[in-house]
Length: 163
Image 1: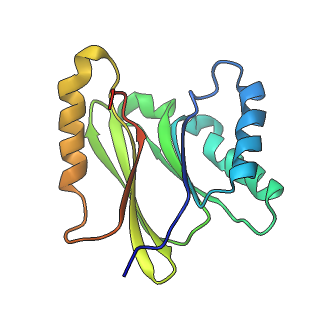
Image 2: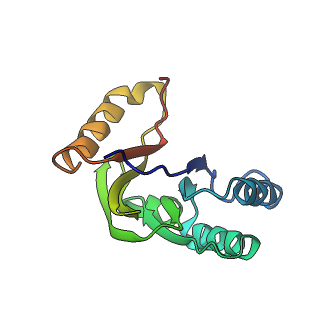
Image 3: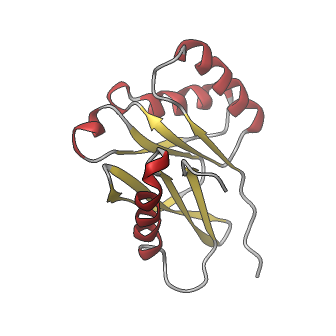
């Protein structure tokens, strides 16, 4: 049986930096136009409840859509400033956050779509040209936590690397 289709949008928000008020309007306009099932976000500002604010604003613009924010802070003191988040209008059956090294985390969310479960991974891997080995190790951490067997899987995030 084929997996049901879902629409996923991925965006690195760059926290509240670099003209956020102007960018926020653009982000909301695009999310309103696209009306995705799921939005994966990186570099959200947990201390400002940025992901929750986006969910509320999109819910106001799209009557009948009820997005809920699932936020995971980075590890250590960096978690005060930055994290990753998922906005979902689909039912969430399970949600977990896992450390993957270098203060980074990966989110694992099981979504219910029609009569099937879909696993979604959201992450933000380490940046920089000298972080290649770190990104590989982080990818291994993520793969080690994937569900056994053949299940529909979506991996999204800022991978900080060329394809």
